Length: 403
Ligand SMILES: Cc1cc2nc3c(=O)[nH]c(=O)nc-3n(C[C@H](O)[C@H](O)[C@H](O)COP(=O)(O)OP(=O)(O)OC[C@H]3O[C@@H](n4cnc5c(N)ncnc54)[C@H](O)[C@@H]3O)c2cc1C
Image (cartoon, rainbow, N blue to C red; front, side, top):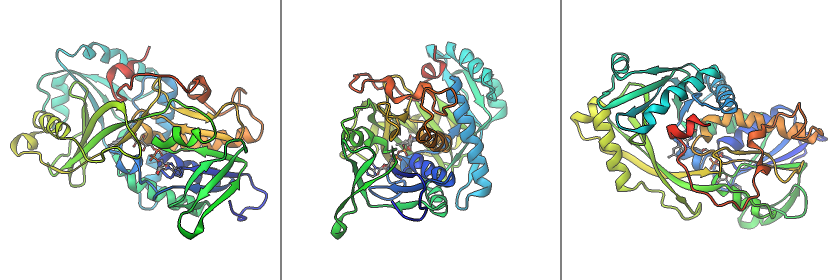
């Protein structure tokens, strides 16, 4: 906490990933006195390992609205945020013949379109006419026009600079823990000779990614936010086609400055955020190479050896929706986590939502008030916290169709 902004509402944000830095910058832009605590460097965890695939093609109304706002901000930041650039690029969701999910694609497209998203149903021949990709064996595809990609690490770095310009005190290499019964108070461990201090705030926002459940457990709060491992790689294969998610193969790909980036490799089991394997598995590299040979002409001619391959963590929740809002009915403790593989692309909108929600809650506008900015479907209190559930893959067509 600082005395830069005497009398202002004081807010601590825990976690310097895409969500935390955006929330911190947006809170400060609205007049709050903000301290951002990151235990490593900004973007050190999931955000720095993300693929940077961005789109608004969601079937649920709240998801579509949030993603549309995020895309609007990514495009605006491309013009206004030094060090950040957004590359527009259509996003193709393709399903192969024989995959039962193919039957669900028309309904998925209808739902996305009903929320105003520019998504169309396409057959493989029309897809091949429009894009330089091989469509052999495909049954059907959806093409989302409001999509693109960026370098996630540069978004976090540029937003971190924006946060500092807005007056946020950015404390990196500083791990914090919640002080159980003491409202919005934190134990701050800056390491070395700085030692441990205690600071009190008007509000604390926990945006600690895969560590969110551990951080909230410090205040005796249980949340069902479970980390799981996913993987990505880059190759030097030249590629200037659309972003493609081959849903049947479970592999996505996009253009990348050195060639092509591909990923998924979901391991649907809980992972230890402090002890998971950060290298990619051989089976993942082989599976991606197979899909690239089938879909990308240049990869069928030369072996698509990975230039770099890595793993990182996503977070699952029992219903696939995130937890965004006040915890346990509190007006001082807030959470933003559980993105099921879609946290980076929603960060610009989620950060803004958190900023407006926290300030409204502190002003006495409860989450149940009609004018509250918080989204009911994301209410953290919809869970008891001790739920057991299967980790579902975040990108599946089935998951997008909804009910
Ligand atoms: C390989 C891969 C590809 C992905 N591709 C995409 C994609 O294309 N599009 C997309 O939308 N999403 C993608 N994701 C998911 C995306 O990375 C996450 O949803 C998103 O980055 C989450 O951001 P965050 O800010 O919530 O978490 P993080 O970026 O993990 O940030 C949380 C931060 O909190 C810090 N922290 C934890 N505990 C403490 C503590 N006690 N004190 C202080 N700081 C603490 C951590 O060090 C960390 O930096 C991908 C993920 C991976 C691994």
